[in-house]
Figure 1 (tube, one colour):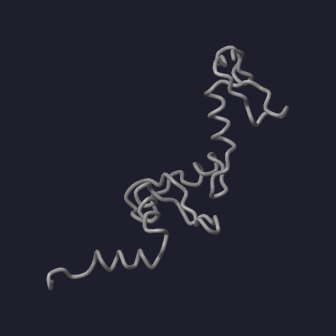
Figure 2: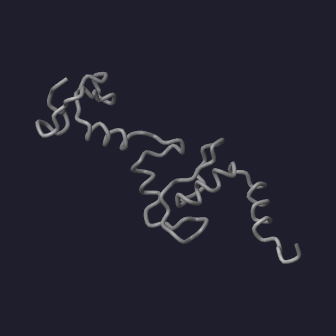
Figure 3: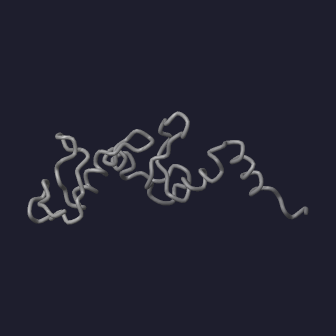
Length: 120
């Protein structure tokens, strides 16, 4: 489908028929790929309940709350309650996720890493 983007005019020609699902008239407004992606990022609510803009504001100028080595890039939340726990770097967020967000498993991992191996 060819048309003119409703958001950016003739600059953003619609060549592949994207329809704006957020349009007030029930999704009949044509938008280009750029505006479709921008609107999705702007208004989508992530599992933690924040929009993309709110999440970016939440992590702005914060260091990872676990390693304190690199800037935070993600909002960490409890997957059961959806309550936000803090701001983490990707590595720490993936690490606790791979361990099932389970404090007992994390404690066992700490014990494993810190046990004295010179006596074995």
